[in-house]
Length: 490
Image (tube, rainbow, N blue to C red):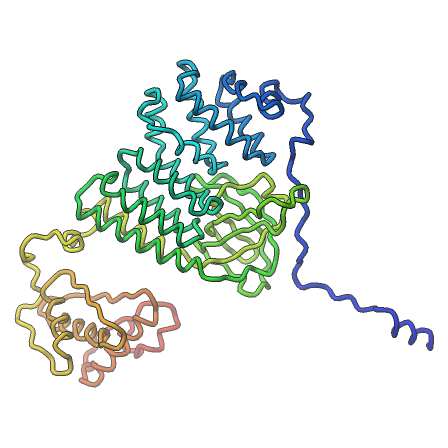
């Protein structure tokens, strides 16, 4: 027993097990030094080993071009890839590729920007595309948004240096669809992490060129662009707020297929992680937990993504940045940047209004401010409105305006009585001779509850619950049902 006491006193017998695994998996990436050149095609040996870029001119098919580009990217040879692209575009400019190759080569290079967006800078360094062979020029012109998209996805690495090449490419585009323009703005809001860089791309580049490249009514284009910019800036500011990463490390697996042209990955998630619950369309950032063991100086790879689906223990992500070759070999940290649901809904609403206009909104002219003269047949009350003593002059003016026009925008700082004004508008509409149903909505449950509370307090005080017909119905989750008297529910 004495020996046991001495053993317990001097020998540490307690082992503390960490709640979450902190050790990231070790992984390595292929290097040129490890290549068995005897097993590679001759053209690849000349290009990658001997740096003889003239061998690129001997390539005959998209498959060969794609093989060279993908092989170099897998081994982290970004500088060699840049030199290949520069060489090929210089040959294209000089008309040294023959008559059949330009379109094949350019199409392969453009398609490869999905995997290596940093290569888009080579297209920006070209002089006027209009002086290229016709087929190549038309292909570049059609692919302008694709090149701009690649610039955006490379912005986190290039930082402010991305602005000039982005503007160079944008200046060569003669026109752009509203859909392509909106997609670029949304991509910036999701993937550019520096607010200053995002601001430059949005305002100094896209907004400045919008009146030239977007075709349509000036009032419509102005409304479209300004609202897109406002939504994007708000989203960027929210995503830039400091967020804590999950405590567990994730293993990512390639998912089946893609989503809107972007790759999908999936991961099992521990359900006992604090703040570990995700929701569909959450904006997340996936960051490699360590660098490859054979390249300690390499930058830590990071991907912006949206949650495609989530259930306890499993999530799938749509990734905007290209997946690295080692995506399944390393451990990943996850940072939740907040929900993108409201932002996506606003983007979609602005896009739908701009592209469908009258078909989706009967008051589009009022929204755009292009209605000529007084609106006809829009007086909602048969008699004039009498100012109420419990409202001040501006509140009464707001009520009267809402009864006389199909669309009224009311603004006021907190505490100025907007909710009381809304309640009075509801009561006036109910008092009209027409049998109208009134729908009150708000971004949050609490905002709707505020209106409901004040409305109920007013009608109860006036003794208006002496009818068997329900006056109001609160539609929401069960959280707010206790605010409504039982006899008012259907």
